[in-house]
Every structure is written in C-alpha cells, then in structure tokens.
Length: 410
Length: 202
Image (cartoon, rainbow over all chains, first blue to last red; front, side, top):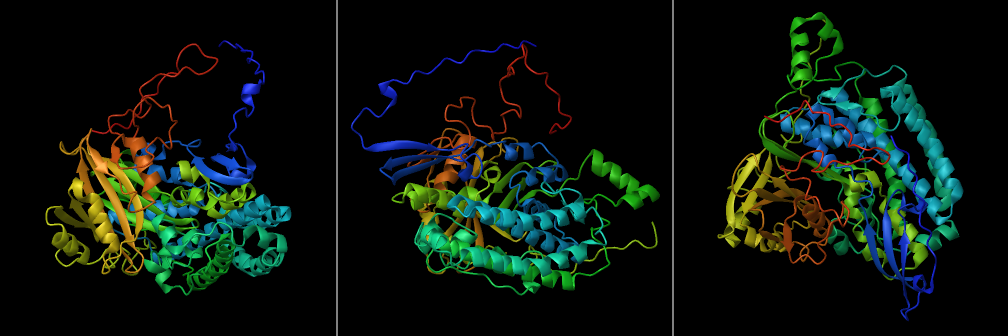
C-alpha cells in the first residue's frame, strides 16, 4: 500500500473568478453539503439580486443503484434494502415492498399481522413527519422545534427497538407476516405514546401555528394550484395541500384501512402553510388509526402465514418437524419461485404514494424491480415554486416538499 | 406437526381480490380499454389482465395521443401520471427489446391503468412532457438508466448518474452488476479482487 499524498495546487483568486462581465445574474450553488437541503441535494440557483430567476435541482449524489441490486437479490433478501431508501420511515418501505411481493404471490398476511403492520406503518408516518417538522422549522429559524420533535421521535424509536431490535433500519416485516413475536410490553408502550403525544402535539401547534414569524415565512409562499399539482404528479401532503383529495388509504385501501375511521385533511391555498397544517392534522389522524388498531387487534393468533412454500417456516417447527425443516432448507438455499407476471402496488407513504412495480419471470430473483418513490416526483415541483421567489424562501420550499435524499436518489 | 400450531386463515378479500381498483377485469368491459379501442383502432394492440391489473399495449407512435386522450376524456380522467419506466426484456423475447411502462391513475374515478409500448434499441419514444409535467424527471431517469431517447423532451440529460458518465446505461440487462471497468482504490496499486457471486441467473 502506498501512501502518497499529493499537495493540492493552490488556487489563486484572480479577477476572472469574480463577476467581471456586466451580467446582473449570479449563479449560486446551494448544497450538496448545505444543512438546509436535508442531505446531499444540490440546487443551482440563478439570482438577480435576491430573486431566484432559475432553479435546477441536481440529484444523484446518493445514488446506489437499488433497482439494479434488486435484480440480483432474491425476493426475501431485498427487504433490508428497502429500509435504506427512505431511512426515516423504513417500516413504510418494508410494507410497500412486502405487499407488492404478496400481491404477486397471491396471498395476504393473517389479520393480527395486518393490524400490527398498520400500527407500525402509522408510527413510521409520525416519525417521518416529526423529522420533517423539526428540520423544516429549524430551517426557517425555530431552533427549539427540532429538539422537541426528536424528543418524541425517541419514543417511537424505542417502540421499534422493542419490537425488532433496530431503531432506524428496522427490516421488521417479512413475506407472509412478521418473523418475531409481539413483545408483551409493546401494547403498553403504544398506549403510553397515545397518551403522551396529543399534549405534545398541542405544544407544537402553540409554538408555530400562530407564530408571526412562522406565518410570515410560510403563508403565500410556494403556491401550487390544483391542476399544476396534478400535472407535476405530486402525491401525499403536497397534493392534499392544494386541495385534491387523494389518499391511497382511502382511495384504494390496502391492509385493513377500510375498517378504520379517519379523515383526509385538505388544504385550500396550496402554500407552505397549508401543507404544514395538512401534516399537523395527519399526526392526529394517525393517532386515531393507531388507537383503533390497538383496540381491535387480536391478542393471540398467528403473526405469519403458515403452510406456504413462499413463507419461511417458524423456528420452533423447523427444529421439531421434518417437513418444515425441508421447507426451510429449500427456502434458504433456493428461494421461492413466484408465478410469472407483473404487479404494481401503491401504499400511502408519509411523503406520498410509494409504488413498487415488479416484473417476475418465474425465477427466484425479480426480473425488474422498480421503486416509484414519492419525493423523487415531488421534488420536480421545486423549480416551479422557486422561480420568482426570494432566495431565503428556497429553504422553506425544500423543507415543505419533505424529501429524504436516500429515497430521491435510490 | 405440533398440536398447538395454528393455520392462518384469510380474513377477507385482499386488495387484489377486490376488483375495481383497476376497473373491470374483463378487457371487453373495461371502459378505458373500450375507449382506446374505439378512438385509436390503429394504436390498440392488446389488453392483458393479471392480478386484477389491466395492461393495455399500444403502438409506439400513438403513445402521446393515447395518454392525452385518457387524460382529457371526461368519462376516464386519468389525470395523474404515477410512473414511467422501461423494462429490458433481453432474455425473455427478441423483438422489441424494451417495454415502456406508463402507470396512470384517475383521481376522480379512483382507477388505475398501465400502458405499455415496445421499443427497440436505437428507436425513439414520444415524450409525455407536453401532457404531464411529471414525465420530465421520470423520462430523464429512464434515459439515464436505459439509454433510449424520448422525442420532444425539453431537457434530456442524465439525472442520477454523473453528467459525464461514459460507461453506458446500468439498468440494461447486458450491463454487468459491477460495471465494465476495474477501479483502483486510492492508495492501492491493483484493483480490489472480485468476489464471484453465487447467484447466477440460469
């Protein structure tokens, strides 16, 4: 190993580096290491004074080729990769991928597992919204919000940790259900969160909703009209902030969402403040769903589909019965071969519609695995909102789209 | 087999069993298929239903007109472009090599529809940017990953890979998983040894 250190050539600033021509336009690079871009987003801004005349988001700094990797992994091996696309709401990513594979295979998980999937998905939504609220408010100048939001997020992380042992990249779901039993203390932790969180949510609202600085920075900024929002393919709170009623949980229910009572909040003006209000209301609706789930979920029953060649057998029967030991061996060594076909399954992720599209050629490896992440599509609307806005508003606009660069770049 | 083992039962119809998310499963009853057949008899190729999902294959030249028709037709209103991507069918068939897959959703009707069109290497596909602004980045990503040109796209350049990436388009099936080139890490004289993957597609 050779350790050569090359001296960097010093850059001498000459007049050519300064603005020597008579253009009034200045090009400003925001990111990729700017703290307010929520990761490695780079935005190339053309400025005239403080007004943005052109905006070009440059993405791809976190591109890992997840779709290409998916074409080399067996179906069950790809679940941990979905954690790493949107790492602040990894149970939702697990859920979207697992539901797509289960749709391809043609079965669904037992009822108890579906309830727990809904609970974990809604917790992922709350955790993701908490990160959004903390960082969005931090960008605009409310420093203390991030401290409070991350304090409540710790409670959710503890729930994840109790359930599956991991906090961030959970890998908690499995084809056919869950691989782990529900810890006996988990329902108590969920109920404790349901008791604690509404008062904390009121604190957030008290801090921000009528705050004059918050109102001045968010009202009337980044307005998206309803038809423009549809044309840009926005989903999630960005679309509902513009007043269009599209929530996958209501429009095309998956899991047991058709048994749940909840409402879809809609904005009226389509600006940053409306999207803030929509997401604040989604906190309350998620709490409502979790409360119904934890009241209705059966306390005993299977958490995983049994007697299927597509599902890994439970550990105790693998150790005691010959059939399950054989099934386990085949499942681990060869994987399973789903039928030939193609499926697209969309779920309501915390950021919008998360779609997985799988083309199967009958082999244990997906032929094509496409992940349609919501924030990749939502981020396209940044130039539309930013052009004509002030430079300081660009920070608020990036925050309001709610991006995670791991999910944008995949 | 142990006595206390529970066999899970299916508690209710799953999403793919609840027909209606993609419209009627019979192509001869699906209003979107019927409308495409009536309005574009030359463009319609076939319609396939799998797991309640309706896939309509159309001719490549008519793709933009068909999508615009589906968006504007008052009975259909497919007004949300959900996804647009390619599938490389290299080992599954000979001609055409690629499939362009367009996923549409109708917010007022709550229906989905998938459009497909075949394209060979070197041919161009009509861009959907004049119809949906959402197609801009989706088509840039599809070009970046598969190297097929969208005719009429205003700003077709690489998006996820570097702008000066000169090693082809990675989601093609003939692109090796570890790339074409050996890379020497800084501080080393030879490239890192390659680990052979156990997983080879037959």
